Length: 289
Image (tube, rainbow, N blue to C red):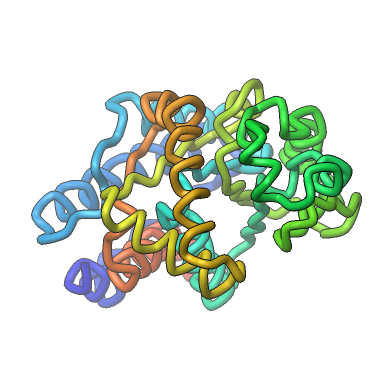
């Protein structure tokens, strides 16, 4: 990918920047984007540890059609996958890269749309005891999907919102209207709820993060013990629960994804791909030059 990036940065035969306010300009850009995406996929397939595991054959055509016919709607990207698959890590990499490149991207976590379960936790004595009682915390019914749909709809139309905040400290408390989110050109929503119900229908790009089960277990236990103050016994109990929940709610959504990527792929390599996307979509010559 470094070679492709260097070639793009040093090329002299730059293309005249298309006029995105015209349909013909957007159609030209769509053809250009399609060819570059195919180039990335071909390069990635030869990589020792490729990041793209599968891409739906009609994805890029559907996406570019949307850009042509509805160019002013914000681009909504959903990132889903099992717990400890690398979703948050990948989103953090996207955030760091887009901030470095000064790109108009906003990221929000769908986990903040868990319903408040603080009363249930108090009744049972702890979050772990609530799970032991059979409470299915990952069920779609336990997310405020109506609010998530409303907030994403408003963002897609260019309206800023304030989203709730679910406290990941074992209390189950949700603070309403706690986190301001800007209606940037690109909105990334991360979490299992991004694939649930009519929220998935809002997304322009649906990405699923796939992970080897052994790596997932290692990452889950490390996170539970280092950042969530769980001992190994409780962490393993919760891991068993989330694996069962995944079978019911997350894995069935995998086939709906436009793109499936490898959660254990090199983050440095992933960053290079983001850099390349940025350059091929911005490395034009202006008409006045």
